[in-house]
Image 1 (cartoon, one colour):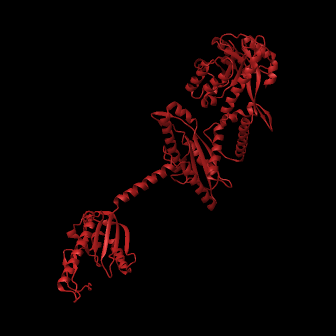
Image 2 (cartoon, one colour):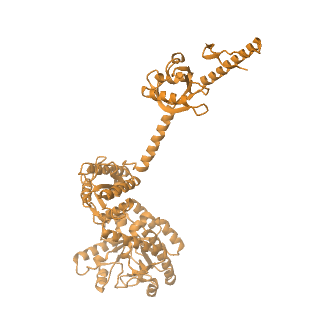
Length: 627
């Protein structure tokens, strides 16, 4: 049995060997062998431990209770720059820790000495350590007391965490970038809708506390699409950047009504900006800000050396009871549309009247959607007659709405709403198919050789958004009618938007054999170039000129010129709105081919129109219908 250690120790290298007094009953030779074996085992164990620590990918040091370094491995040399020979005997804190941490380090050692054996006797901390070359590095330092009775020795492990910190920094940067991108517009760098909604919510809370008010200004560039179409999207993007800067500058350099915050202005759509005005004393203060924003567009913009003049329109909304960020943006947008309806380059404030109109419009739009889904729409037909003998040669299909509460509604009551809501596209598809189905039924009674035709109105939006060529192709395959018996009527508005695309679509329809009519000629932006570039077969002379025949010389001259021009271009002329025998006589004298109007018959349901029909075989001149 081994006794307790006694004085008599010697130091061999870095290991401490202690002599023992043996049991007197054991012979000296045996005791010597035991002692040498124990010493060998101890040295071997210490050697294996040191080899492990030398190979460990972590810096290791051991110190006594005074903090003097007793051991120092190769990783410690690399990490701190001190060789083992130089480090041994130095104070650990003074060697690798900044002066500001010395006191804390000593307190940690003292607390570890007080920890009872068996309890967790270690401390871990992340700190910046010093190197011999006066550099520094971030490390994770673990200090533990050697687990032995009464030991005042400490083991210290130091791990270089600079790569980890860099990885953490990179991760935080990436997270911040993702957060920034999710809340900001990539083109202008302005806050987006999500950020704006948060800001408005906060501003509403502040306004309720301090009895102030806020305003939301919804701004956009008038006719921005023309900029993209004429100058290209790159120029359009540059214009938006310049507009955003001008708005921001106007708010920064104006009066104090708008606090100079980076998130005061947001971009929430293609050319749509929102200004948040906080801490207003009265709603009227927002009007001055709106005027200042509009004024920013007065000087021309420089786009790739081109001077471009644009205008801004603004809608203003202030909060009412229960207002939210979303409701304020919606109300401001509604006011903006009102400003555009009144000509643009102005502002409108959302009020109770606008709210009522919006509610009514939403209700009417829902009703119209329901009408389309529940077969409340129908077609009425107005006869088109040959001027020379009054024979019915065709019909114009006109849409009606059989409203459950309001009765039969004409197109003037709902077509504008259908255009604005986009419902005109499915409504137009339905009208074409319904008219062709009815034409097929009439054709069976009129005979296969009849030149009878049906005209259907096609909206500009339907040409732009619907695959009209495919629709007509499928419809002609479904119904056994001659393509020339179908006339598609378009207004001049279709010619003002994306002319190249319109020419292509109308050209494809003409190739199918379908006839094309230019409706309401002479009332809008009529241009002879339309008749040259677009494949029109029919020209409809607007009723406003017909009403003046016989007593308004200018109307007579215009009507005569249009009819003569159409004849020269081998086009068929249909005079609209003929209501009196005198008007019929005048268009006969002027040479109009066809006519329609209440003088002959009003629009009527298909079943009533069927009673008027007799087999007809009128041959019209040139490229006339039925030719």
